[in-house]
Image (tube, rainbow, N blue to C red; front, top):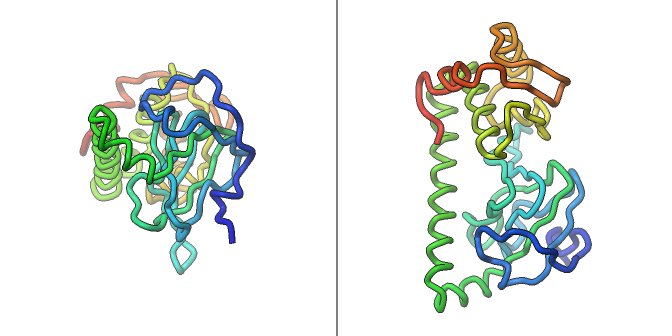
Length: 226
């Protein structure tokens, strides 16, 4: 039976995308993914890593009581499915229409033996993922609800390279499940930031940052985000 990763969207020739991680030579195809389509499920054999070429993805786990924890959001240039063993440990869905470059694990292991520079890039990717998990741990364990929301907005701005207008592809429910909060608490603290004239709501999914320095001070009050 084919896995969801094998049944994913059409395989297309690679256009001239920037390849910041240097993996293009390992697989000369990219895969188009529709918004809300699964890239892989928890328990699928982890035969591939995926370099995000376009779009934003989320990795999450559903617990037996129905709760969902979102563990990461992946952006262009990020690797998805890197920190997994023989089987994927989380579900991965596209938040937006996007494209990924599959990187077969067997090809990667062969390549790093003869290409030290590629091994260095993998170590850098691993360090980045560990740092991201440390950041999430600090957010969940140390920060107040307002600080969590401020940290999320700052991190999203930094990761996407956006100016001061953020178009968020994730719902408030997804933000809540990432920050360990309820939807109501996320909405309440977004309202607090708006009332303090730190942000402006352009529409439900768009936020303009009016005072980045104040937003960063709130985000870093208890602990910094990398």
